[in-house]
Image (cartoon, rainbow, N blue to C red; front, side, top):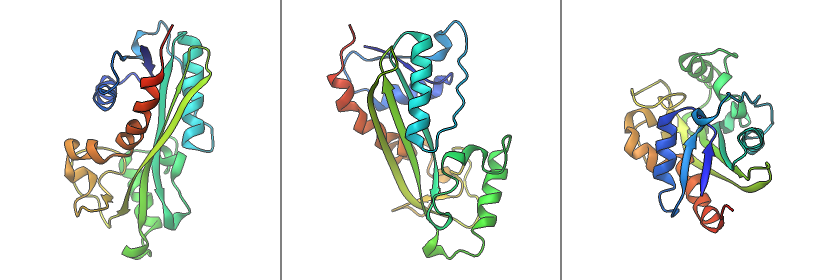
Length: 200
């Protein structure tokens, strides 16, 4: 079974190969194998909607099944923001540091008890015609710290303290992060679906 992963990032491909290692005969490849790039505008209101849109548009161009994901941070005190706008919370070309600064500013008057949040990831898999085969989501619960800490990871990792830990995601390092991450939780739900699929 060959599935195209909607990324050009070899590191993300390796992560999915590890997360989906229990699926026998699964071969994953990146969009680098396509003759021309596919630029998908992520304009849906939910992570699942964006993941499905990406997977569908790319599968139709590639002519093969596609797996796509969308993920971000949901902060309860902000009504679920930044949500699908996580990567561009402080503006279209905002850096991680700018997004983190905006989040800290908005939570400046929020108590530690009310700083609950979660990283959420939705994964969609479609066939070569763009028909939905599976959608799953996973979450990593935690809270937002008072200042950035740690040098591992990216995005909001320096602010996010997962439940059961005192360190931020950026302090825990990749091995622990990959075990508890929202993407890992979603991928675990995807494994049984992929085991049932067979390509012609």
